[in-house]
Image (cartoon, rainbow, N blue to C red; front, side, top):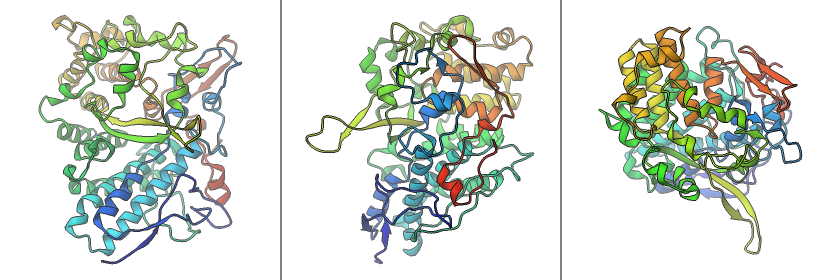
Length: 487
């Protein structure tokens, strides 16, 4: 079997665009391995997922973050809350760090695919090829979602995208262009559809850390929701959970979760044993340690969204009783805990890591419900919403079943379609508090945002066409020749 020398990205290596020509590496990493077996290719793909975390800045930019009014505490997410570009702070939980983490992941996928191609794409490599292609599609999707405009069929062919990289980087230099949002989406779909049928779940030791067929189809529901291909959203969601099995795969907030204490819930939420977690990833991040204490986060004003009269069901959802803390300085739902890795045996502290739920059963249900509503399949949308509420309302009974009237009464000025979509977004916002997914809906649907200072005297308005909705390309990439996003 051929022996292929490849460059393995390590935590200290920097994947950037810099210099006179577009460079994705500032140096060739010293750590190398011979990728000479199907087993090693499979092992390499553990690095085909971003080891960076988007939650801290995505959550801060959304309306899930309020100003708690204290300036004496550390304010690490102040820049995204104020829509100030972070372009050169390549530290954990910042956009440049996530950008670099994504391209490192893409590089790992590309090295694996190159080896598979050289070995003739034999059957022993088939499952790894599938995982590499779907992982590459996912990572590029997250990059284009955060660092480019949301997909709009009217403008996607001219809106600048992000570099879609399909070749391994053997030299320091390489020429890249941003392409367009449309071309990025075409490549994502190509990789996704080619890779998905090849995935074999039995190849994984811990499936939740890889793209299983379930997770891949779940990602497809997100991709096609952004692309506005609603029928495909439904088709892929039905493959993830055929029949009525989705209810058994939702987090049991109104039963099991409702009985758990703070640390028990914290330990379970991002655990691989939780069936709702379809794809998990370890990320270098201090989010789990710090998010309850960030000045911009779950403030008293934001907490109001959990009140029973603030959602179309008329009932408080179970997670509202799991908001811990005496005041908004520490309000939090215990979803994350930090896993620290010490740099030396004698060190008292180490680097922080979080397990991040990248894709969950709840998102699949929400995506299908919205797609059903958009296709005027009202009864199906209502059934999806009702399935969700059956796992969220404590003591759920027939009186709690959802209906068009409940949606219309809560959104009296909207059509039934828009009221149902509004209902989905309302519950989705509560469900994913502290997880960053609210920002994806904001950019996808061009939802206006207002960030108001704690004293009420200052207001930042982010209209639907505000260029700050698109996160700025990192400084090194712009210096290399990639066009910056307009400001």
